[in-house]
Length: 310
Image 1 (cartoon, one colour):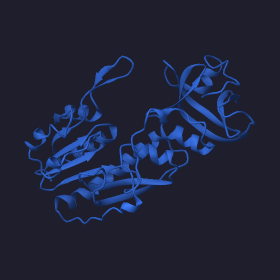
Image 2 (cartoon, rainbow, N blue to C red):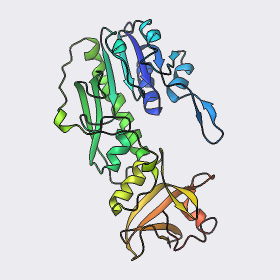
Image 3 (tube, helix red, strand yellow):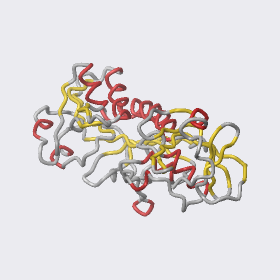
Image 4 (cartoon, rainbow, N blue to C red):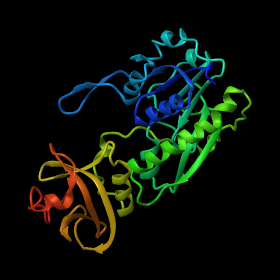
């Protein structure tokens, strides 16, 4: 395995953990390709992505094309035997896909052909799915459309948030990758074509979708909030200020009130959806840090009782 030259392509934490898996299991990763550094936070500080940070810490060459469709020669010059991708964030051109002798594979966080695209974890929760998983597939020029090499399914718990499901899927992904790589290197694996009639998409979350949608049902609102927690996070507006809703809990407490009405309950805060209380456990006021909802009830939120979050 050590003589197989692997280039890894990825950007966020999920990708970093796949890279870590390769490195810690003595695969010969000769380079990491990630998205360019970007400005982050209110102070707009130039920040490297998790994959780049990990690669630098482990003396792995880093390549950051602004547009890999136009700037791919530096990848080809390394003459990789295999390319492994996970959450890279750009469409990879045919010039790269056709170059490695063992091909290019992608680790994707859904049960393809369901949820092709950049936000499959968030979408699986927001759509109310009861299961999801990891797919390892051959890469083709169409987004997430390659033949399936291996898959593993897990259940989505009704209390899962984006963060908890993300972390569980990382464990599944690294285990499945380690099980799958030997057959790829030996060129002994088989594939299954995706059923195009069953394709759905998990496109990136839009800014509009981050805003609390009070036109939806109680369960749909719950799924929206937990599906976006904690990235990018669902928010509502109270008294002209943005309030990010990080953690909420369903209850069987009923109030006949307008959708979005804020009520005080058991020293905490809740909002009414379809005349039913959705308890807020953790939130983040505009310009503030994450806190327990109970902590703001007698502070910044002391006058919220009866106001409508929109």
